[in-house]
Image (cartoon, rainbow, N blue to C red; front, side):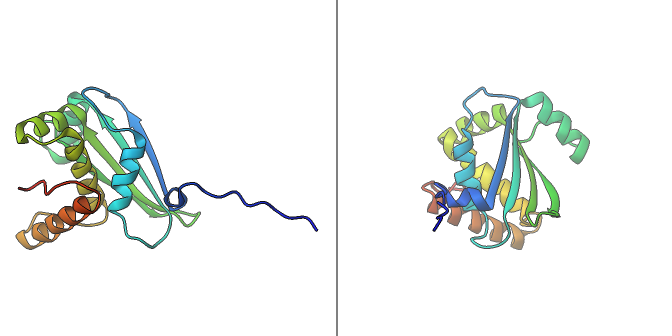
Length: 163
C-alpha cells in the first residue's frame, strides 16, 4: 500500500493569509515581513476565506504624492489604505494594500516617545482595520475602531497607543 506523506505546514496562518511586502524605503528601521504577518493576522477575523494583503513601505516623497493624488492632501501621511478587489476567482479575498511611510512612522514614534516597533504595529493594525471597513470619521465609529485597535495591540503585547 502506498502512503502519501503529508508535509506539515509550519505556520497554519500562512495558508489562510498571503502577504506581499515591498520596500521602497528601509531607513529608518522598518519591520521584517514576519513582523507584518504577525500584526496583520492579529487584526483579521479568525475564520473566513484565505486573505491576500500587500504592504508597501515608502519614503516621504512617495507618500506625499500618493496622499495628494488620492486624498488631495499635499503632505506625507503615515498609512494609506487601498481596498482590494474582494473575492478572487480562486476563492481568496483580496483585502487590499497598505502604503506606510517609514520616515513619518519614525518621526511620530519619536514625538510620542513610543518604541518605533510599537508604532509600526499600531499603524499596521490600524490600516488592516480600515481595509476591513472600520473608520474613524464619526465619533461613534472612532470609539469602536480605537477600542478594537487597543484590544488587538494588547493581545500581541503592545500598550495602548492612545495613552
